[in-house]
Image 1 (spheres, rainbow over the protein chains, first blue to last red):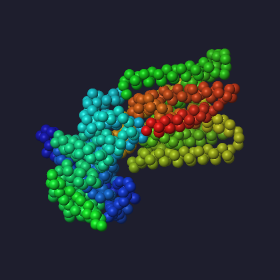
Image 2 (spheres, chains in turn green, brown):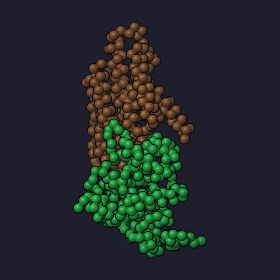
Image 3 (cartoon, each protein chain N blue to C red):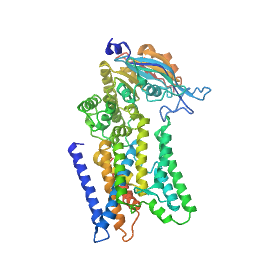
Image 4 (cartoon, rainbow over the protein chains, first blue to last red):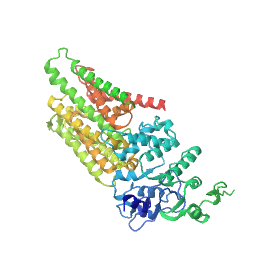
Length: 298
Length: 315
């Protein structure tokens, strides 16, 4: 069997039994947010905090999965651990990640970045990098020669990535002079420049305006049609449900449910996920996609 | 930045260094420039200033990227304090031990701190911030021990130790200066070969890892190279501040933040700045000589403030 047919037989990404624990104090997943409900603070006899507990899921080619869960439920940790950004050789940590059938975690850091691109909520801008330079850093994993900062292929890929994410107009502007939303577009372009087939977007659209959120959403659908697999973390359920195919619900570091939008995004599941919020399920009158509404009683 | 613009910037920068080097050789207190003065005194000093300026600027630029902190400088990691402690103890005990122009005890002090930092960097769960804080603490510890030693020791050798603490290139000898230039050039080259990793570090450690850089391995290598570089520079010239902080900022304005261009340009301007500073230290208060570290601080501090304020206005 050829390599290509072997890889087609496997899902684009398979995450199996992924666990992660912190030593001592649990690290806050996102800053400045008050944590409601019970977080992943189960301390075993070893004093470890189990942030992620045996989570498994598969991401197919052309699929967009929305990952939902309250603060501290382990969403970012799941993404980072699956992307190989967290060490899994410690007690309480472990699991398997397979990328098109290949043992992803046994690959070198450089090869991992060629397979999965992880994008956080913001790009740091302490140094005077232009948007184009920041995107070109996405080619770090392609590692062309010592004296050649960029090959023709690198330049073409960077240009394509910037066009895909609407960054071309401000390519020469410095990162510290861009708005938060524009920086997120640059971060997305950088991830596309990496050439990875799997994209992990960790709150990457949170600062974009509605125009850009809609445009990037349809661009993500386009990328999925080209064979990309995309995992999106967002607190904006209504936005993510508009263009994702399925959802993965995470609570206290454990998988609560996973499956197609309409089957998983139910009143019962949402109630379990956010017990302190009075939420009502509805539908988008145009697309029929499940929507969540606040029910604030006076 | 266009290729031609970059070439122009480099050409002008090299010309600036050549001009300052000529200035340092030709213009001084003595009107009759004898071969002894030229080759025995001024040339070694200018070469030594070139080497140390290069090393401090490259080290500063590298550390700023490695720790994603524009305020890092070669002395942030405490290596200089280790060198200072070694030098003060050595000088006050009369153990000068100069090998190839490098003060042996100072270099040993720098190596000791480097070894501690490297051992900490070897631990798999050490983050950059842990390493940075360790360096700062070692710096405080070294400075305190220097003060303690100076207050407890007799005045013999104290003058020499104090002069060394503020930066002193007057002990330059031709062979030692050339040796140091070769070592600094080699270590700077080795650091430059990591330009891709340093670029990735500009947006933080996690980002660098996501971009495909083995953060732990690169950090260990770069820390070792920069620590050795700084150890050699401090061992040869004492504590010369501001070069490693100001020069990379100044150069980023000309060629941007990517290290394939930033490191060589920082090397050239670091050399230029220190050759000028050393020349000023000789001629400003003639017949007395000012410590070169004081001159770089006097020039560097207002320059840095001006750059910061201008940057604020441009935002």
